[in-house]
Image (cartoon, rainbow, N blue to C red; front, side, top):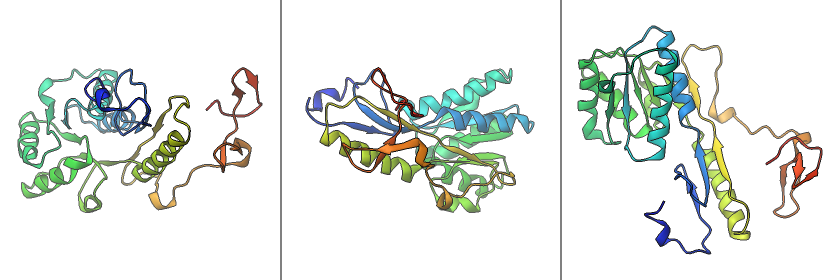
Length: 239
């Protein structure tokens, strides 16, 4: 954050999307990164894979760090001693995929987690070209992955992230002095054959009337708060 703060005007409304910095005094809208990776790793371990390879993205990004931590936490909770050689950095580059996959195969990893959409399709293509069938977890940023064999897919609410980000920046423009908000959306782990199936086009935001109240300042509706400052409102949400 210190590297860019000098370029920001003190009165300029700022919203970081899908990125965040430690101790930054600015609003952000992100997707939970550690949880779906943790769950994917756990599912692979429960399926009998104790040597799970991990292809990480660009090392310094917050998304890369959080997703890697989810992988490490899952191994730790399963009492599996992580090997440094199981983690390779692809730097979100197509040219690095062959090296990454070959190293994990050399390390006798029986499953692979690809940590972002930029690399997922390239990994799937390379595995197909070399005729290697490994249980793999992908991110679903590319529709072509629908044709790739996989163990599971991590689905991100990208459209919802964009919509909420637009709403948030418009509110900041109207009221730059409002409190700093950090909005975090949840990703989903989709596993073929699971009795639980979700389709993005059928997803919706739960907007039960008893959870909402009129937003007199910005229009439309807002969550019905339990408290407003120190005053009890009787609602169901504090934010």
